[in-house]
Length: 328
Image 1 (cartoon, rainbow, N blue to C red):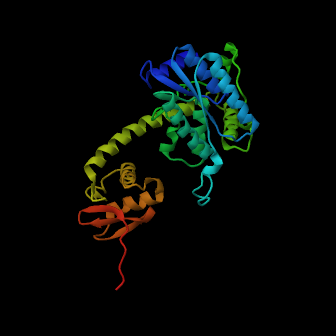
Image 2: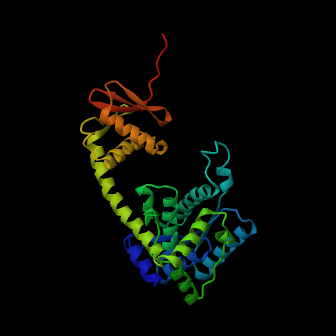
Image 3: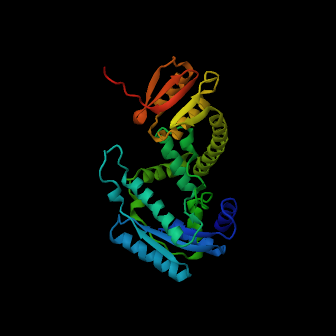
């Protein structure tokens, strides 16, 4: 039952009695989440973000959510965003896709709506099927183990209590409760990668494994557990090996050759993250960096992204802005 799954999830995610802002698009998933949370007696407000991407349909979605809140006695906050504006300027490589821009603006707007309604947490309606689609999309794009952690149950104050619920269970709940919702025609368009992956999962479930979505969800949960263990190990190593002196990040040079590759790469990435250039780094950078940490010559240096370098100074290494040579 949806309410049981939502209740169990929230028990491990937020303190009992917290005020929740329900991110509601007007679609079936968020409408069911709102219904289940109200049935469970949570203190709620509703947040709706109008991206303006579907013209009159977007306006109708907003009107529907406002009416839904009024009919249930739940306050509604609305914010309008313009994803197209976020894509103006910059190179095509740096420019986010329309979906990425919409996502960034949506979460920022939900944070503001939560503040305005004094909600401590934001609840979104991601389901097991959304998790499966995310994991498979990342796998198809060549993601490493960290990418296969999928959508986390909680990010900051955003919680996802429907992650353990299949979409067909959501549909059954909506039918039994006589709920009304809005359909987004773009969810059926093959122009979007997620929609094609959704169709692929359905085909694979029919032909090979009827529980594929749950298997992909379980894979994400297992990967999150492994990553949490590794992150704790990396943090412990980083505290003893990485320090900052006057804006220069210093890495202890001992025992890198004996360190397992997986830990060495993660520790190298952590050093670059602390230096503020973690987002610029690729697997190639990390492999070169680990190789240098293990075999670097005295006073030698290698280039890092964003105008930085990794240089050996005695028994330590330094992550610093690249030194410029003066002409004689």
